Image 1 (tube, rainbow, N blue to C red):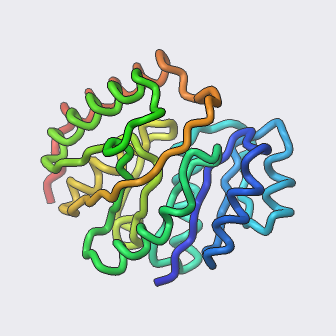
Image 2: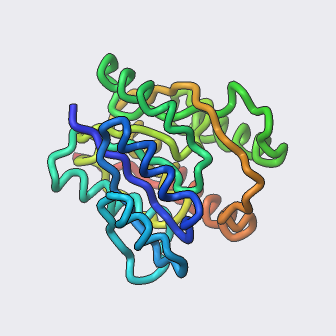
Image 3: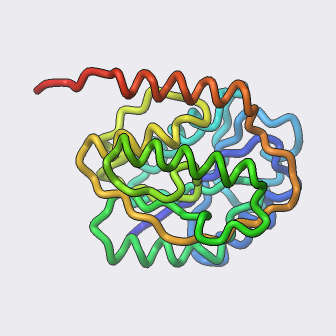
Length: 225
Protein backbone atom coordinates (compact mmCIF):
# COMPACT_ATOMS: atom_id res chain seq x y z
CA UNK A 1 0.00 0.00 0.00
CA UNK A 2 1.53 3.28 -1.15
CA UNK A 3 0.71 6.02 1.37
CA UNK A 4 1.63 9.70 1.54
CA UNK A 5 1.24 12.19 4.38
CA UNK A 6 -0.32 15.53 3.47
CA UNK A 7 0.18 18.51 5.76
CA UNK A 8 -1.69 21.80 5.28
CA UNK A 9 0.51 24.61 6.60
CA UNK A 10 0.16 28.28 7.41
CA UNK A 11 3.14 29.96 9.11
CA UNK A 12 4.54 26.73 10.59
CA UNK A 13 8.26 27.46 10.13
CA UNK A 14 9.13 26.55 13.74
CA UNK A 15 7.75 23.00 13.68
CA UNK A 16 7.74 21.86 10.07
CA UNK A 17 11.35 20.67 9.60
CA UNK A 18 11.26 18.32 12.59
CA UNK A 19 7.85 17.00 11.56
CA UNK A 20 9.02 16.22 8.02
CA UNK A 21 12.16 14.54 9.35
CA UNK A 22 10.15 12.27 11.67
CA UNK A 23 7.77 11.24 8.89
CA UNK A 24 10.43 10.52 6.27
CA UNK A 25 12.28 8.33 8.80
CA UNK A 26 9.25 6.03 8.57
CA UNK A 27 9.64 5.78 4.79
CA UNK A 28 6.58 7.88 3.98
CA UNK A 29 6.38 10.61 1.35
CA UNK A 30 5.43 14.06 2.63
CA UNK A 31 3.29 16.54 0.70
CA UNK A 32 3.12 20.06 2.14
CA UNK A 33 0.27 22.29 0.99
CA UNK A 34 1.14 25.81 2.07
CA UNK A 35 -1.72 28.27 2.40
CA UNK A 36 0.06 31.55 1.73
CA UNK A 37 2.48 31.57 4.66
CA UNK A 38 4.28 34.84 5.36
CA UNK A 39 7.21 33.12 7.09
CA UNK A 40 9.83 30.62 5.84
CA UNK A 41 7.58 27.54 5.90
CA UNK A 42 7.90 26.88 2.15
CA UNK A 43 11.69 27.18 1.95
CA UNK A 44 12.22 25.13 5.12
CA UNK A 45 9.84 22.39 3.96
CA UNK A 46 11.51 22.24 0.55
CA UNK A 47 14.98 22.05 2.11
CA UNK A 48 13.73 19.28 4.40
CA UNK A 49 12.85 17.08 1.43
CA UNK A 50 9.08 17.46 1.19
CA UNK A 51 7.10 17.99 -1.98
CA UNK A 52 5.60 21.47 -1.59
CA UNK A 53 2.39 22.70 -3.21
CA UNK A 54 1.39 26.32 -2.67
CA UNK A 55 -1.79 28.36 -2.68
CA UNK A 56 -1.19 31.84 -4.09
CA UNK A 57 -3.25 33.31 -1.26
CA UNK A 58 -4.77 32.09 2.00
CA UNK A 59 -7.67 29.89 0.89
CA UNK A 60 -8.38 27.85 4.02
CA UNK A 61 -7.45 24.47 5.46
CA UNK A 62 -10.13 22.68 3.47
CA UNK A 63 -8.88 24.03 0.17
CA UNK A 64 -5.38 22.83 1.05
CA UNK A 65 -6.66 19.37 1.99
CA UNK A 66 -8.55 19.07 -1.29
CA UNK A 67 -5.43 20.09 -3.24
CA UNK A 68 -3.48 17.40 -1.37
CA UNK A 69 -6.16 14.77 -2.00
CA UNK A 70 -6.15 15.56 -5.72
CA UNK A 71 -2.36 15.37 -5.88
CA UNK A 72 -2.42 11.96 -4.19
CA UNK A 73 -5.00 10.63 -6.65
CA UNK A 74 -3.11 12.00 -9.65
CA UNK A 75 0.13 10.38 -8.48
CA UNK A 76 -1.18 6.90 -7.74
CA UNK A 77 -1.21 6.79 -3.95
CA UNK A 78 -3.44 4.15 -2.36
CA UNK A 79 -4.18 6.23 0.73
CA UNK A 80 -3.52 9.62 2.29
CA UNK A 81 -2.83 10.46 5.92
CA UNK A 82 -3.50 14.09 6.86
CA UNK A 83 -1.74 15.72 9.81
CA UNK A 84 -1.58 19.23 11.23
CA UNK A 85 1.64 21.15 10.71
CA UNK A 86 1.98 22.58 14.22
CA UNK A 87 3.40 19.46 15.87
CA UNK A 88 0.23 18.57 17.82
CA UNK A 89 -0.05 15.19 16.10
CA UNK A 90 2.50 12.55 17.08
CA UNK A 91 4.33 10.75 14.29
CA UNK A 92 4.50 7.75 16.63
CA UNK A 93 0.84 7.13 15.73
CA UNK A 94 1.48 6.86 11.98
CA UNK A 95 2.27 3.10 12.04
CA UNK A 96 -1.04 2.46 13.83
CA UNK A 97 -2.94 4.18 11.01
CA UNK A 98 -1.09 2.10 8.43
CA UNK A 99 -1.70 -1.18 10.28
CA UNK A 100 -5.39 -0.35 10.62
CA UNK A 101 -5.65 0.54 6.93
CA UNK A 102 -4.04 -2.75 5.93
CA UNK A 103 -6.28 -4.87 8.18
CA UNK A 104 -9.58 -3.01 7.72
CA UNK A 105 -11.96 -2.62 4.79
CA UNK A 106 -12.86 0.90 5.98
CA UNK A 107 -12.04 3.71 3.57
CA UNK A 108 -11.77 6.30 6.38
CA UNK A 109 -9.92 6.00 9.70
CA UNK A 110 -10.09 8.95 12.10
CA UNK A 111 -7.87 9.69 15.07
CA UNK A 112 -9.54 9.82 18.48
CA UNK A 113 -8.10 12.27 21.04
CA UNK A 114 -10.98 11.85 23.45
CA UNK A 115 -9.77 8.71 25.23
CA UNK A 116 -7.04 10.73 26.96
CA UNK A 117 -7.92 14.43 27.26
CA UNK A 118 -5.27 15.41 29.82
CA UNK A 119 -3.72 18.70 28.70
CA UNK A 120 -6.54 19.46 26.27
CA UNK A 121 -8.21 22.83 27.04
CA UNK A 122 -11.62 22.34 28.65
CA UNK A 123 -13.43 24.38 25.99
CA UNK A 124 -11.96 22.20 23.26
CA UNK A 125 -12.97 19.02 25.09
CA UNK A 126 -16.54 20.28 25.44
CA UNK A 127 -16.74 21.52 21.85
CA UNK A 128 -15.31 18.31 20.42
CA UNK A 129 -17.71 16.21 22.51
CA UNK A 130 -20.79 18.14 21.40
CA UNK A 131 -19.82 18.33 17.73
CA UNK A 132 -18.94 14.64 17.69
CA UNK A 133 -22.32 13.70 19.16
CA UNK A 134 -24.07 15.92 16.63
CA UNK A 135 -22.25 14.64 13.57
CA UNK A 136 -22.48 11.02 14.76
CA UNK A 137 -26.27 11.41 14.81
CA UNK A 138 -26.26 12.80 11.28
CA UNK A 139 -24.04 10.08 9.80
CA UNK A 140 -25.67 7.31 11.89
CA UNK A 141 -22.26 6.05 13.00
CA UNK A 142 -20.39 6.55 16.27
CA UNK A 143 -17.37 8.79 15.67
CA UNK A 144 -15.83 9.77 19.02
CA UNK A 145 -13.74 12.68 17.67
CA UNK A 146 -15.17 14.17 14.49
CA UNK A 147 -12.98 17.27 14.72
CA UNK A 148 -9.66 15.42 14.60
CA UNK A 149 -7.63 16.25 11.50
CA UNK A 150 -5.28 13.28 11.93
CA UNK A 151 -6.92 10.70 9.67
CA UNK A 152 -6.37 8.27 6.82
CA UNK A 153 -8.47 8.22 3.64
CA UNK A 154 -8.18 5.51 0.99
CA UNK A 155 -8.24 6.22 -2.72
CA UNK A 156 -11.70 4.79 -3.46
CA UNK A 157 -13.34 7.30 -1.14
CA UNK A 158 -11.05 10.10 -2.34
CA UNK A 159 -12.10 9.47 -5.93
CA UNK A 160 -15.83 9.49 -5.10
CA UNK A 161 -16.09 12.50 -2.79
CA UNK A 162 -17.28 15.80 -4.23
CA UNK A 163 -16.21 18.33 -1.60
CA UNK A 164 -17.63 21.86 -1.74
CA UNK A 165 -16.19 23.58 1.36
CA UNK A 166 -12.79 25.22 1.82
CA UNK A 167 -12.27 26.05 5.50
CA UNK A 168 -12.21 24.03 8.74
CA UNK A 169 -15.65 22.53 8.07
CA UNK A 170 -14.18 20.43 5.24
CA UNK A 171 -13.12 17.76 7.74
CA UNK A 172 -16.75 17.40 8.84
CA UNK A 173 -17.87 17.35 5.21
CA UNK A 174 -15.54 14.41 4.54
CA UNK A 175 -17.27 12.40 7.29
CA UNK A 176 -20.75 13.22 6.04
CA UNK A 177 -19.92 12.50 2.40
CA UNK A 178 -18.23 9.20 3.33
CA UNK A 179 -21.26 8.06 5.32
CA UNK A 180 -23.69 9.08 2.58
CA UNK A 181 -21.65 7.07 0.10
CA UNK A 182 -22.14 4.04 2.35
CA UNK A 183 -18.68 3.76 3.88
CA UNK A 184 -17.98 2.65 7.44
CA UNK A 185 -15.86 5.11 9.43
CA UNK A 186 -13.47 3.70 12.03
CA UNK A 187 -11.37 5.38 14.73
CA UNK A 188 -8.09 4.69 16.50
CA UNK A 189 -6.78 6.34 19.69
CA UNK A 190 -4.03 8.91 19.19
CA UNK A 191 -1.84 11.10 21.35
CA UNK A 192 -2.04 14.87 21.01
CA UNK A 193 0.70 17.27 22.08
CA UNK A 194 -0.48 20.65 23.37
CA UNK A 195 2.28 23.26 23.51
CA UNK A 196 0.15 26.28 24.38
CA UNK A 197 0.43 27.59 20.82
CA UNK A 198 -2.52 29.78 19.82
CA UNK A 199 -5.03 28.03 17.57
CA UNK A 200 -5.56 29.43 14.07
CA UNK A 201 -9.30 28.74 14.40
CA UNK A 202 -11.45 31.84 14.84
CA UNK A 203 -14.03 30.64 17.41
CA UNK A 204 -16.86 32.93 16.28
CA UNK A 205 -16.32 32.94 12.51
CA UNK A 206 -15.55 29.25 12.21
CA UNK A 207 -18.41 28.20 14.50
CA UNK A 208 -20.86 30.25 12.43
CA UNK A 209 -19.44 28.78 9.23
CA UNK A 210 -19.76 25.28 10.69
CA UNK A 211 -23.38 25.88 11.73
CA UNK A 212 -24.22 27.20 8.25
CA UNK A 213 -22.63 24.14 6.68
CA UNK A 214 -24.47 21.74 9.01
CA UNK A 215 -27.80 23.49 8.40
CA UNK A 216 -27.24 23.12 4.67
CA UNK A 217 -26.40 19.43 5.03
CA UNK A 218 -29.37 18.65 7.29
CA UNK A 219 -31.85 20.36 4.96
CA UNK A 220 -30.22 19.09 1.78
CA UNK A 221 -32.45 16.95 -0.40
CA UNK A 222 -30.93 13.61 -1.36
CA UNK A 223 -30.04 13.14 -5.01
CA UNK A 224 -31.99 10.51 -6.90
CA UNK A 225 -30.42 8.33 -9.52
